[in-house]
Image (cartoon, rainbow, N blue to C red; front, side, top):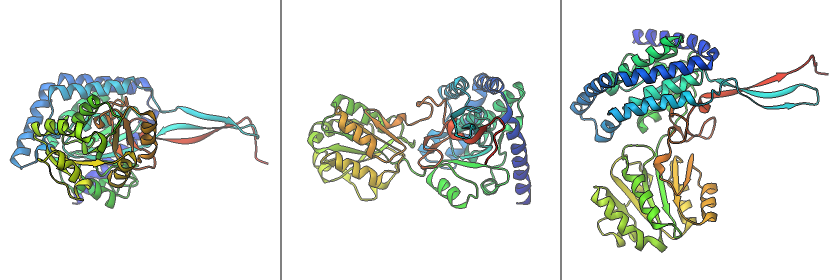
Length: 419
């Protein structure tokens, strides 16, 4: 344990030193590093897949569930996506040093705000090795240092990606310790990371509810997080049914083990007879287990009975709860009662209803006529995301560059003194 404490202290000290250099790094150097990392990742595609296959084999041997293995798996397409995300980050404006809200005060001074890095960001994540590249890229561009602690199930993949990151930093003349991957699978390292207040400014956990709850309870460092992704799609009685079917299908079946997948479908009673049997046929053909209320089961007898717990459950699996509601009021009430405030969508052609939904649904992402699967930093044009926050303070929704910065007040004077 003493060895882990000393190791993590060393990682923290190096990160703090590197964060000062990163805060001063110019945009060109940061962009060169991002481009270099993207190139290295693409050149090492075969190596990354080979290392990832070691993790997948061990995961299967250890009985990891299908959703976790899906998140763990790297393919040529996902590797290309990592590189594209890094290049998109490079193309984004550099937020650091941006000055806004400058105003003259009666005294003659000018007061405004300047955007600055947070400092050292600790990211703790499970299964998804692509987070290593995404997090490194976002922290780098936003002038922060990063300490990345991936899950033990992805250790080979994360080390291989980290080698590409270090190469890119080195070639750009930036400190290699600006991005450090914790090189131990000992869980004690997590306990150290989340309590190192002198070295770490914020923690971002990405993973299952158990991990995030533990981090939230035990951390002595501020945490940016979301616990659940209980996402809803509401099909209104004034929806375009073709759109509704396409959106509700995609929101559930595009990928099951992700936080922005729909977990509850709400259908207006006025169109339930028309749309629900068609949609449920698609779901059943794709192997989705359906759990519905009394009205939904009357239309689709293959449904199991939904319990109160189903409305509160993030399945991360081919399971869907279905409820028939009388109107928009009932839909919004259901969502605000059971939603995890992650992502919720309405399908309607009525502008007034759409605007009400946007105003009254209290979630980090609220959508009109679009699949919940778009709740993603890459899809939002952030380049990538370091996570999704359902908190209301500091950052909310997909956390990209701006979410990894803060602001400080700046004052410009010309000899003024306070009288």
